[in-house]
Length: 314
Image (cartoon, rainbow, N blue to C red):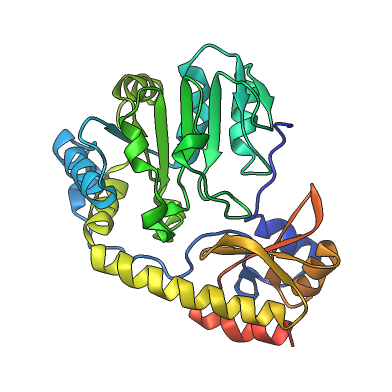
């Protein structure tokens, strides 16, 4: 497995190649909820003072309740899950890490940069990384799959499937579970995430990130969102319906559903690059993959974008 980075969300490149203004485009290349959590009114001090311990503790309390985190597990707010991904390989001496793929490639890139040998299968390794559910195919893992003295579980997309979480594993030594705020709540620009698990490892990670790693506005927004359980429940129901609607449009065009989550859908098509060009001609950006020429991934459109997608697929 190579450490090469490849991502969706590169809309600027699509505009440069296919034309149009940004306002014309529908970006379905990511798995970010298009109907984001409504940002609450923020205090003036969130902007003008350094984040204080009491506000951070309130965020941690809300996170512990929302995810039913074991009492013995630690919780560390981080400036986006990606910030934790970069630093996690530094928590142990470089050796071998198993990262079953294909999967989100930032994990492999970070371990390679830190001097680890990355293996793609399930061979013997000192560390393991499991993206749960997996990106892009939505595969779910079980506790029995987790091995190694350093066990990383990336649950960035697991909030759409709260019953599938492996959060109880956070109580086991050597475990770090990642949560992303930007995807399910649709506020990627807030740059907020959480590392949950072995307190000793989180103390190391905290020291690497330095003081005031999470901004005051992010703390207030995250606290409000994590306390709003009704919004989360209603959002899960809406995502199920919207994902089924995208499936209906795609399968009517002879695409085959491979998997995914209710935030992104993975299809097998005859020629993914040709599909991407066709959609781009309608100013819709999609995700294709360098390792599979027949896989096409689509996120969900906002309410205002359904007609544009339907027009492109009819």
